[in-house]
Image (tube, rainbow, N blue to C red; front, top):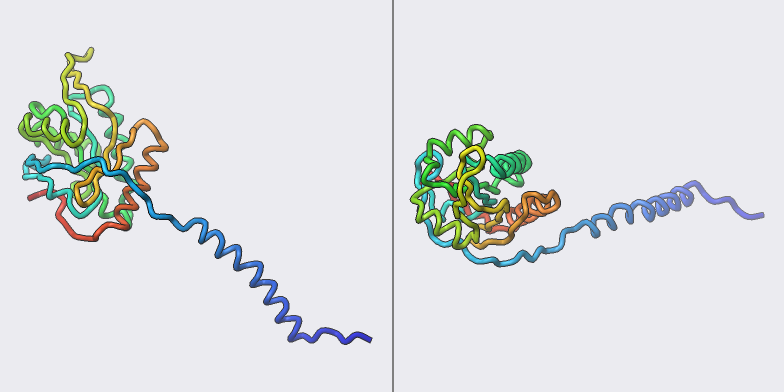
Length: 221
């Protein structure tokens, strides 16, 4: 007559089966989901510049050091793509307010510096609930702004007449640019493409997580 299995052996057998069933469910997804190192392009350096922010304070390239920055180009009289772009940037601000994204900053550069004084940019920033510690707006001497926008940022400030409402028609694109903490441009993203905006967030968070961790003040001198 075959001896029955003891309670102790039965318990050990059940534990082994449980472990074999549970471990793959934990380990395999972890290994699959573990993020591989990203290789972001080097699209050139942001050169030295000297502008002013919406509060009239000096804003230079040093304000971009030590943290990722997402950059866009707008102007306050724009009645075409700018309101849409800025609302998308507002949503990005909301999505990047958690602790892990704290170092990611946002910068809007006017392409109409003759009209867009710090006071007008401040009113525009308030309209879109921009948080100064997170999102800044800059202007400056037209030639200095043009040098920055059309130089390293590869955008346009060409005026092409007026819109139907009488606002200036300034040729500029709706792309967002990602700059790392060493002032290297690491990506250009079409703001009209939802997948590209998700990619932008992913890349910015990657830079925030893998950056040097140096602390620099975001504007304000």
